[in-house]
Length: 519
Image (cartoon, rainbow, N blue to C red; front, side, top):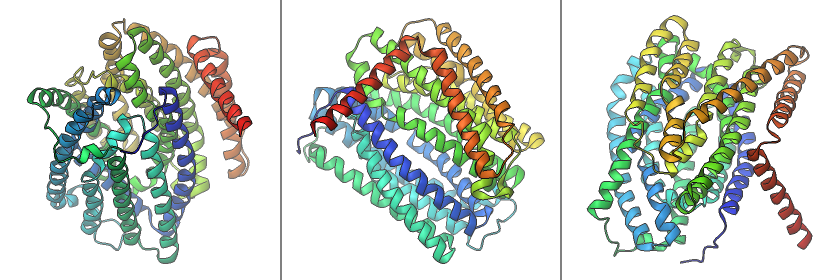
């Protein structure tokens, strides 16, 4: 096996974070260029088809049932102990599970073809056969299951930067080829085939890297997991499966409902707003996606007080970043859509506002989700979360019929408020930290009040931006960056959590300066 350099949790987190930010910055720019060209060369119905099939295939991902999260959690301890035999056994079990899952997804996906015409009541204005496009999307999803299981080993080993780096190299190259194809041909089929090829190359590349760095996972003499260990895994998988079902019912039905009530063209129009909000969420997610491996290591090796103190640090990061992002989504996204895609794609203010509120609500759960998974608290609240999906589906039908698109997004928010928005932090505080959950909610409501006041001030200033669209975008982005960060700094500068982050940041700067000086 090639020698793998061991680093501290902080070093791993920073490498994961900076690799993600560097790659994501380039990927976002290229991706937006590709998106603009997509809109300019193809109709809104193509965007709708993309969004609809993405939602349907997300629902098919139910077959995965949270196995990857359970496996990553199971790998933390053997990786910390360098127990190669146990790691190989877990990965062998994981491989067999994913082979079966890929087959299930393929069969169920094909069986859904006869029902597409029920969801899509009016045929979209595209020249390609809708069923053939669906099969191509399904193929892309199914192939990933046969290769991607090994990337979980790299993530559990705190080497997310490898997974992210490979992903960005492939997606950037893929976007470039898609741009060239669209400009040259204006054909959607080729665009989709390039996406499939990119996914195949990425999965093979990451799988090969994991096998190279951990060659013992390919051994022919791997000892199968004992029945007791499998039983323990299945307990966690069962809890994660229920979480996954509710998550899919909440997150992956909106486009289906919008298609049914308002038409597939509406999905294409709102998808530009969702692209901007998901970009903001993904940029923020780079910070949090870099941490689970290190937090899992911390939770496995540190005492309860240390775990709790870092959770408070993570919660402050949660509020600061997602609060700032929500303000930008609500107040700037319509101008960006008008600038990038044209005035025909601009929606009323209440649409980006409800999208921003949803983004903030789910974003504020990031620290709770991270700790719940790394502490192994999968089973708590597993059945309650089914109500999230049930409430969302019922309200989608009721509010979607009477309020249209805004009603569907409002249904999602109400479903979360009634269930996981309050229960996830409750479970972490009660069962992870043995503390009163009211401590969390007191802080949550205080921060929410700060955010509302900050957004109102930003909205008042943005109302004075009545210039050209480009100038408006620049000015509003400046307002929604300087004012929120200034207010947040003033409010939190004396807290222990901010001082911790400030000291970490200064340490990073000092280390960078030291490295440059030595070179």
